Length: 169
Length: 101
Image 1 (tube, helix red, strand yellow):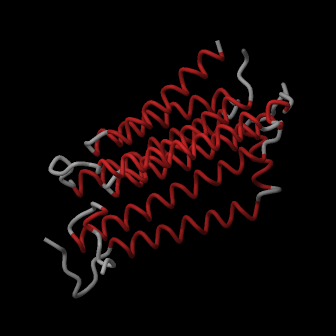
Image 2: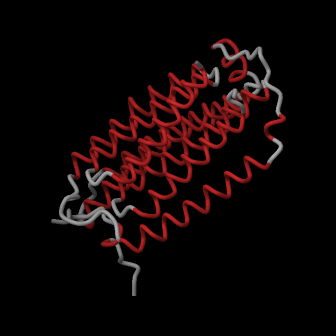
């Protein structure tokens, strides 16, 4: 059953990722990205990382994809007018991605990873996360909070209109 | 056949390669950005898998931070794309060639 679920989620993830690459319409690409992230959340759930799978749905599907959709509808780039990609760059990109994928594949399949023991009991409750986050990883938590503040300020500054700056037609 | 670490790593590698393909091939900045997100998520799959098969929570906590940073990064990146669109009127990468010549 777990095998079947893994293959289902893996196919969902990679298939909709390919759809993101191939979709001409940007809105469709964003929705395929959403589907792919749902697949990744399923994979996380199979790996006993339930908190992370919920967070992935909340942060990515709830915030990031919604933000992408907002921007796509705001900018309305005329995607239909021109071809989304050139033939020569498709060829070169496919070869490059295939080389990268084959390299990673051979690294994974010839490595010693399969010998890694499967630990049956794995503590991944909220309590364990909290204990880690507020003892070992206290400094990163604070740094990340500061990063969020800085990025918020950066977004405000970036999207503000300054004097003498004109919009392009 | 049971699902081991290898299967998850292969999935991660495949997803990373697909995202890489999208970054190389597409011309729309927004889609390129989506493919970058795919690559980031692919790397988190590998982290979570290693963490699970080592029986330690640290990888999961790391992914937690990656998710936070990714959210901040998306907000800033999309703001940059909007600012670019305001100045140049396009988001197609082959029209953004001011530095050419």
